[in-house]
Amino acid sequence: MKSHFSIKDKRIQDRAYGHRWRLREKFLKGGLKGFLDYEIIELLLTLGTPRRDCKSQAKEAMKRFKTLRGVLEAEEGGLQEIKGIRHHNIFGIKLVQEVSRCFLKERMMSKPFCHSAKEVFDYLYHVLRDLKKEKFKVIFLDAKNQIIEEQTFFEGTVDSSAVYPREIIKSALRHDASSLIFVHNHPSGDPEPSLSDKEITKELVFAANLMQIRVLDHIIIGNNCYFSFADKGLIEDYNMIFKSMNQKMS
Image (cartoon, rainbow, N blue to C red; front, side):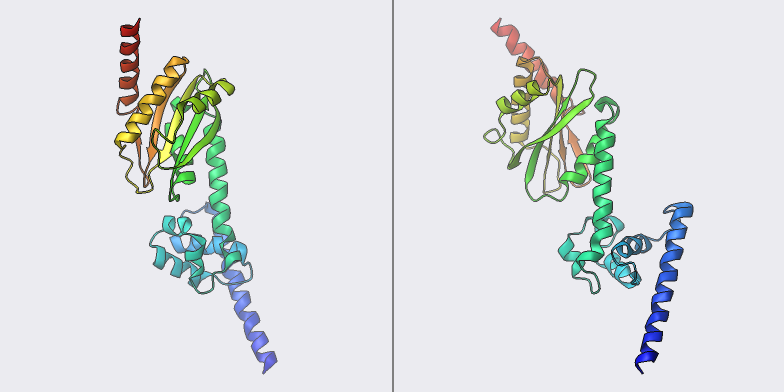
């Protein structure tokens, strides 16, 4: 009897291996074209369990989280609620997330901001989208609008009592930055700026102007969307207000 079950188990494993091999060959020949969403998840799950069939787990994950993106963005605890998915099964999903973040950051850092605003959003969306608190970041750029560095300055509720223009300007001078981009997230998913968002942006634009540093934009990231202060003309409005105040004082 024991021998009978061993042979049966081996046949199941052989069929699972053959199925995984066909999926991998299909990917190597044509990428993800022609793949169903659950097959992509299945392929990722098998990276952590190369000897197991993960088709049923992949289908259940799609059923529970609705979309491919939903599965890829799911928390580890939620994925592990699916029978057959354990910590090591999630290796492939976490791996592709981290590789995507590294790739997007490297691509963003290698190109001028003025030609790749969407790439900045894409990278920072991956970084900020799952956070429960607001996180305020600054991107420092040189005279050619090449990105020098990205730095987090604050986590919590973004307001004038939490974000210190002086500290940001000190960092800008330390990096020898010519211009700045401010970015923060709205965990609610709605990127529309609050009155506090507008006030702190105006204060930062004023502080940067005093040191002859340009503010290119303040981007608020929501649920797969964003609000750009520059696109809405607000950055230019704040610059004009500063110049008007300066002229009156002189």
